[in-house]
Length: 430
Image (cartoon, rainbow, N blue to C red; front, top):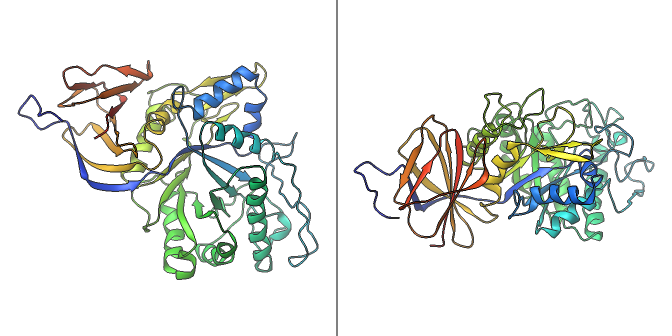
């Protein structure tokens, strides 16, 4: 860095000596058959969508794909799910009767497509155990795992990872519950924090080769109880490698009580319509997503950020809107808000400490494994701000209403940060 040209402190100061969390990556989910929407597109459109998600040159460069254990059969509503063991084999101690078609409702296809772009992290999550394992007898509407079925359910989850291994896909993270604190009308299952800690000690010893994840709570504040229960139990703490929470009930505003990596593993904003805008005050625009990612990284110290969903239909807040009749798609600024982080902040990056002289600037900084540094600046104000003293090999990219990671000039060691915009600045290796 050069010395600033004015007597005022620089707008942004990076402290390379103070290190925060290591980044695992950014991703999306295609659960509940949304991957089939992509596969049904014409080949050229399908490739364009995959580029938008996974390409580091043309899209977001996402590095995590979240899969659903159990997915809807063809012709059924998106919220119906089936499993790799749809029928009761005759009790928890009976030999399991697994069913595998090598495709898993196109999730295998999607995972293989992601692999072609270099994705190596696949996070599989079960929304529910098969209904016969639960006290309600059905996949839907909550219910709890029967105690006598715990080992069978653990075996079922491990078998799912083995089926994927047969197809050449390594499941790297495994979750046994999704929003266990909420009874959903679709596939769902309840676990209290204490029940989750007990089940972890059943699943952990047999889930070799994967990182066990807990517990996908419906909100970040609510996730604290699950993290605390795991951390308080030495047997459970041994097995859980990643703590997760969603952002529906409560946003990410502070770290979870653990030294393990944490992920914000599912969220999209509320809304009643498809919205492609960058900034409109709706709460479902691209600016909202950029601020949510910033807060998760800086306030919550998360290592992973996963959006729900990558694509969908109708009045969705997904990143992309798929038109099934026209066989095409539309792109929201939500995608580019996420892409500003995910394309440039790579797995293995470490977050650096920053000092900010302008209150309107929301800033995060990272050092990538290759030595490059990335500075993400969300200017929440109504006036431009100039960051002076930027030196060396510098590239800057703008995301706002008109630009989607468009090139931004760096002149005389200064970057002008436009108002209501996200600027991504890449500094060469140090």
